[in-house]
Length: 392
Image (cartoon, rainbow, N blue to C red; front, side):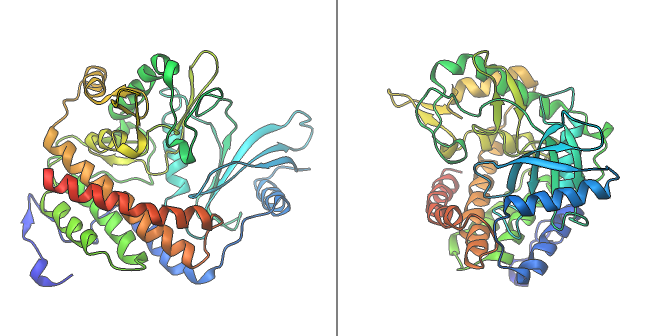
């Protein structure tokens, strides 16, 4: 970036220092660029998955390893996912497990070690899948992977309308009364979590009382954009500058889930009880407004027949804010909330127009059709950026 755009240090944070980000995130982004030339990437066959898992568990020290009942799980533009049963030694019953592993490139490049640590940290606080094993850098499996316990439940009502990709468009209707309090509580529990007392060695925390929480996120996603840009988009350059110049102070960094929305929680029928909070791969320590702004995105909501918007298909926006504040003890700052709405729209545009298109054009993902579709959806977030920045 030109020195003309370089801004002075604000509250001890150089808002144009692009290297100021979590060390592990830097490693993952650098690895993505370095490994692109290894492509193209092909979806793994059941036989390849069996061979990988057999090799992995044997290396762990298990004997007479048998992998069976391999089943590819739907979705997964970010990860390849398989359910399978592990038997070994004298174990005749076996364990039903889930393998999540990185393709060469995905819509978001994240760390399986971080995912394992955050799952383990929240055991006993929220319903999460147990961690069976992790190969954070793919040293044995051949590609980064995490193995989780299989969780029963659904992400949308089996009898209902509005089914869509990644939960988008799901209508909960009569289920809302059961699911909404649990969704609000999950957000509050994440933000109240004592991250200082947990084993989170793959994570780093921004400085309290500074703009670093916001700048770390801008640096993360702007780096994804500039590393993967297929075609320049002037609005994203402008939005990045706006985000740097308007970064808010975060007085008290908290754990954030960063993708807690419809489609990312499982529940049992007919009780409606949550069985798992899913997709922790983007979790980081930052500003709680980021999670609130993510949940209220139009993409993740639905509308009633009367035209009222429901946050994550569950609750009206104003009611959502009031319920969250009561459950968490946090007070939502409308200026900070708007900032993180802009940041999240920027992040989604980067994913759709940058990382997704780069992975698709280089055939480095197993979901080329979905990635190409996401590229076409990028215009939605560009329009949101214009609207949100104008309103701000």
